[in-house]
Length: 179
Image (cartoon, rainbow, N blue to C red; front, side, top):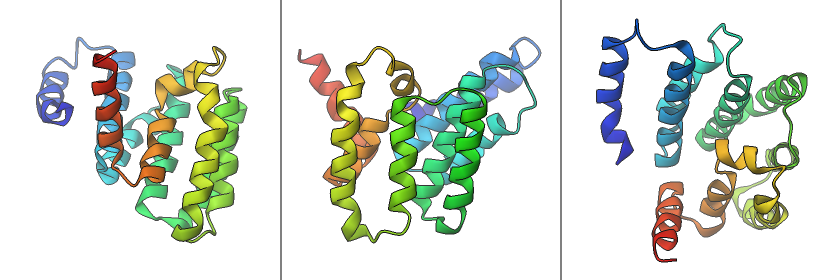
């Protein structure tokens, strides 16, 4: 449903660009990118992430880091295998330089590096192992930032259960309303 609002948000951002600070623009671009990522439109997601990655600013290194992580995952989803190894190293170096690596991200990079050469048939059990390895971290107060910026668990669950990420997130939302 959020995707329907994107054209209106963009029109308002353009209309009020003189009054909207760069920080808010970065945040909006990240949130829009995440909407497209969750809906499976990885090419459009990458377009929005590029706006953040190529922004020459000292603002929001956290968004810069996570934009690069989601950018990596979007290329993974698109099957851009030729880019994965170099992109993975680049993102890892950037995050290490920013001293921004959490246990969740370390585990994700390890998983991605190991999964590059695997066939789809080999991947499902590896996704299941990865899910088990990060699921317990969801309640760890030192790891909450990683989950706030990127719903990595829903992404992995979408791979394990063979459902679109948007469906996984919607099911979680419905479950949370019934608690």
